[in-house]
Length: 394
Image 1 (spheres, rainbow, N blue to C red):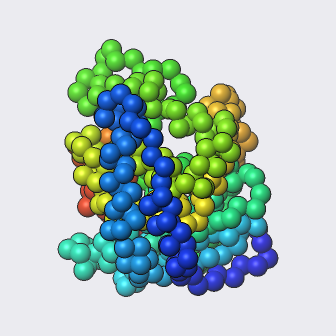
Image 2 (tube, rainbow, N blue to C red; image 1 turned 90 degrees about the horizontal axis):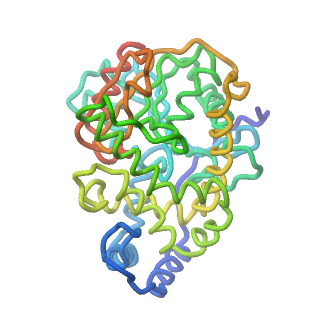
C-alpha cells in the first residue's frame, strides 16, 4: 500500500459550467423514431425517456441534491495508487460497530443516503441504541469520485476488498462488519480473505446465480423459488445484452455513455425498470425520481459511465475464470468465514437451495418487496435486517 496515507476532506462541487453543459445537451438531444410498440420489451420507450430527460433538464435540482450529499462528511485517500472517495459518518453511541457499505452497478455511494441516519443513530429513529454503527461508504474505484482510474486491474474485486480493508485501518477500525450488493456484494464476500481476522460478519443482498451458466430447472421448486427461477431464466435469455457488451467490448458503449447524457440515462434507467420491485410499473414507482437522477448525474459528471464499463470488463473476466476454476478461487488466500447473512428481496433471483446447499448461511431473510437497490427501495427493511443480523457480531 502507499506510504502516503493522508485522508483529505472532500466536498461535491460541480462547476456551473458543467450543469449548463448538461442542460444544453439534454435540450438538444437527437431522438430516435419509435419503432414497434411503446412498451419496454425493446428497451426504454422514447416517450418515457423524453419526459424524464425534460425533468432532468428543467425540474431536477442538482444543487439541492449536492447539498444533501455534502450534509455527510466525505473524504478521499490514495490506496494502491488509486484515489478512493468515501463517506464516514460516526455514530453518537460509544459502543457502535464499524460497518462498511459497498454499492454495486449501476449504483453509487448515494444509494445509501436513506439508511445512514437509522444505522448511525438508531436512538433518534425509533431503534435500540445498542444497534448503532459507525458507517463508511466508499465509491468503488472507477465509480463516482473514485476516479479517474490510472491503471487496469481494479475489476479484481479482491484488490478492491484489500483497498477497503486498508481504508478501514486508516480510519482506526481494526474490527468491522461489511454489507453490499451486486459488485459490492462480491467485495463484501472477499473482505474476510483480504482482511483476515478483522471482519466480524458479512451481509449481502440478492446474490444471483452465475449469469452465463445454465438455466435453473423448475422441477422441484415451488412458490417464491419457482418465481425466482423463472425470473433468472428470463434474465439469462433476454436481459444479458448490457453485460455481454460491457464484459467483452466496454470501450464501444463508453463513447456514448461519456458523450451523451441521454445515452447514460437510458443505460441506467432500464436497469431500474428491470431490477426493482416487480410490483412497480415504472422506475420512479420503486425509487424516488430525484434520487434516481442523482445517481445518473454522478455517473455523468464524473465520467464513470465509461470507467465503470472497464471495471465490469475486468471483473467479468475474473468472474468467468473463477466460475470455471476448480482451484482455490484464482489463488485468493483462504480464511475462516465469519457469520454470514443474506437478504433476498422481491425482484431478486436467489434460491437458497442453490446458493446455500450446505445451509451454512446463519441468517437468511426473504422479503416480498424491494429489489436490487434495497437501500433506496426499502431502506426500513434493509436497516431492520442489518440490525437483527449484526447483533451476532457485537
